[in-house]
Length: 243
Image (cartoon, rainbow, N blue to C red; front, side):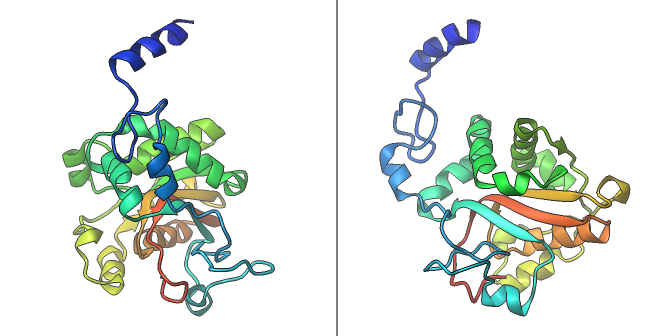
């Protein structure tokens, strides 16, 4: 009852703004212009890594990269492409304390990953190293994962740890450098927590896939039965050059 009364007052004092361009909107989310510019990845794609295909194909098909070098994770899905239209909102969550975006993004993740979530036992966020967590004060992947697990009544378990500090992946010049940067950077100190489980690995952005690949390998080494990746956004390239 109190919440029903308080919301209109709060909206009057602090009108909802578009999470992309900060224009006033009726409710939290993207304005019409920003929404129309978002590339949602809900069409046909690789059955493993999720990279979009230009046309629909019959059955479950793999991209050339996944056929040539199968990833450690069992599937990966993203809500949208990471580009000029989506970048502002995601960086706001990541670096600008926009934790107010978490509930909405968690609902979007739930809709995109609903089939995968139905198979999972626990939600595991991609971790930050303790020094970076201290600097940033929160891990955006953990905040999203906690909200998503609560909504889907799954176990939220930050069982992965970043065992060594690594330079930012954004500073790496190539996909090969990114893979080398995070090689053996993640560990599962208590393997019993994931042994035999189907894990949903959650992150905000997937660029080359190097980070989620390293995390998936650590989870599989610890005994996880399956690892599915879910992210807010991913960099979209031609299907034959991803991973």
